Image (cartoon, rainbow, N blue to C red; front, side, top):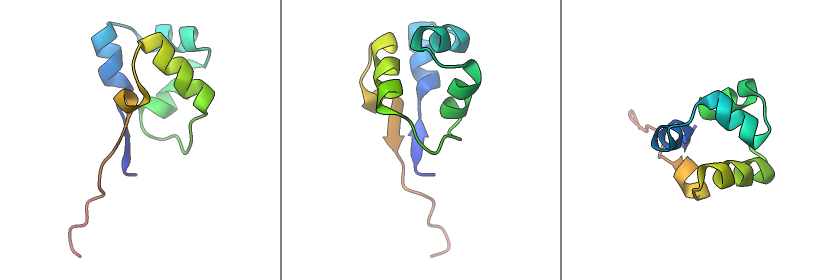
Length: 73
């Protein structure tokens, strides 16, 4: 998928654990792991806003677009 989730980067910058972030955002650690590992198909704006509020960042700090590998075309 061309959308990359950089929650790990922000967690490291904020010296915060996944469990602590999940508690503060109000989602389960399992759901945060799905999002963090790029397996989520969607994210609610309310969840994204809560992540940004807790991590004191912008949505673009957590999500970025990367072109898919087009080798062989």
